[in-house]
Length: 333
Image 1: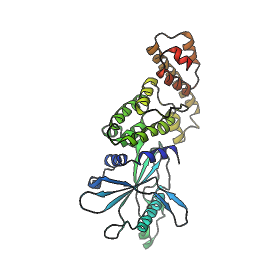
Image 2 (image 1 turned 180 degrees about the vertical axis):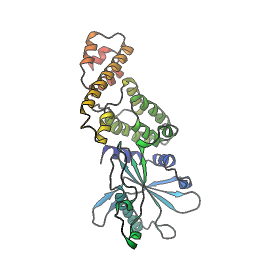
Image 3 (image 1 turned 45 degrees about the horizontal axis):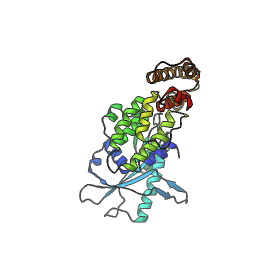
Image 4 (image 1 turned 30 degrees about the horizontal axis):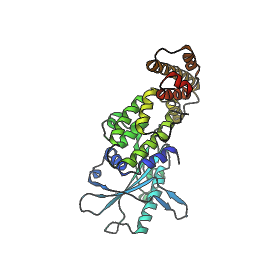
């Protein structure tokens, strides 16, 4: 499983994240009638008739408000790439879920199967061009055969196409995750982390705070600051402090977007120039930061910084500088 998918699976194993996701981003009337205090995670592992195991990323159930005994199931899939056959996958997962519910006798009081929301959470840069309705994947048939074509539509939440203004207006942990994914530099990330830190101080959110921190350290930062290893025991406040001291922008965003769109072939020269420009800017930021903290810099420090040939090394030095008490301590490190 991709690092993104496993990180999201951990985050959305907490009911608070699921509630924020539905309340904040599924803009449909029926969501207001859900009793989120009844959210319960259910098994997402199934065995198909061929005895091949299949696993859904996350399955939750919750009840309607009031006396109505009827559960709504949420079938969630996390995607970092576009899957043209996503509608088919969701139909298969839904069929296996219903088969499992029948086997366990978990039907409605009338003996029918419960409603299910098939939901895909996508954070890739490429536009989602996959069919969202299974019937779109099936050739149209003449005459009466058309009425037997199956129908199933899934709900797509496309993070990178969400409006920044909408995300910033929400006091919502799912929105915080999406803002971090979309952030273009450390300053933007600091602002989001500051808000998330405050929200995650609330009682009962200790385990969610651990999952959130682990996702930031293992999922988010490695994709933005390539080659930099962050200590696994950092907490969110320490992460925020390190980013504040570094003052650097994300290193591989430009290249990553180019790869997603398939543009890198014709733009190699431009990418190289962009890399040189980024290096020059990063050197300037680091030198200004060192001078602000330690005063006038000796010539050997200036030469050392100018000799650094990679964004990764500059970022690592900047992070170490943030924790150093003096230039000598930095050199010793």
